[in-house]
Image 1 (cartoon, one colour):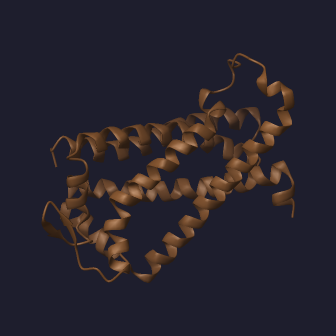
Image 2: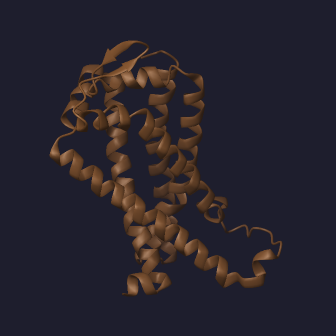
Length: 227
């Protein structure tokens, strides 16, 4: 199949899955922003998206997108590494026209992946997983908390300064990763003329900055005890 057997096909798979993941992040950020305005409203969203069948199916689909995106990312990196041959040992300067993030997408991707693991431990394992295993609550500092009380979990997680630091580093890595990946995905799909590349780079900068600032706002405001 050409999606697997050609470099262009593999890049297309990465692009499509990457754009789908950006849509998910947009939804996730919008959901998180609810917590800044209404704790009750945010917990209602958490209850609606708990362990209901549609949320479970969406989670499985999301996990599949992540796995496919990551596998193809490593596949393409290995392919490029082999293609360079002995040239990979040569010391070269980064061309001015090449973004720093484009040369470090794998490293950024690894940081993003580690952050996802941290996020799953802090939130998914205490919310959806608890419901899926027929649990009624999880315990924080000796207090029983409902798995739908997402606001309490956010408040507790970011009351610890090191979690604030780790999440902000994670969000910064996501910003760098998305800022290049967003416009690059559209370029791979076919919007690769000079006019649209410039436009897409500008849209990418604004979109990913707003997206990541939304995530960072939740971390900072809850971490500072303002909410």
